Length: 178
Image (cartoon, rainbow, N blue to C red; front, side):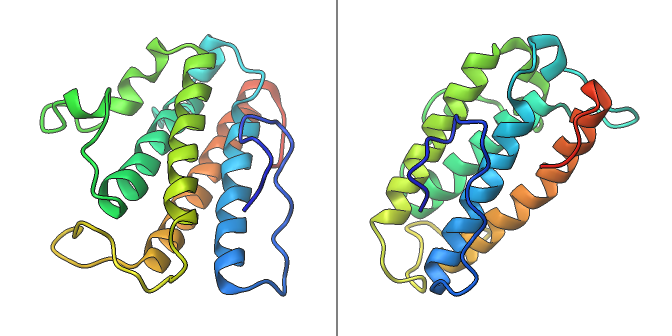
């Protein structure tokens, strides 16, 4: 796993092409985490809340969403912990997109701090397990879930949202690429 703080704007190193499965998966996850952070870096509160129509997605919303996704998979499903605040108090049935809808109220520092805290919890959960076939403490949608599946799902989730962030960032200030 990367020792570089996630809040840095430099990209994590490209994953080693001959690494073990575990190191490959965690390196790709860290790489995409750093891409999202880099896309959000240096943006004002207004820019973090700027969508690229017709979508309503914003980079701030993506940061907050991925903070929740990290907490959901690694702290809740994997470790079996109750959701912490602010997530436990959300009425998800009434506001299923709460993290996207409320991100504009957060400061850039708050979005980055929440993301960093979620990633720190996730990294600790991953580091405590050696077997990718180990199963999560809680089922998800009625199914047992392995650490391998969660890591691959997280890579897919980040890759998709990093593509969104790339397009939104280019529309804000012309910056291209990850």
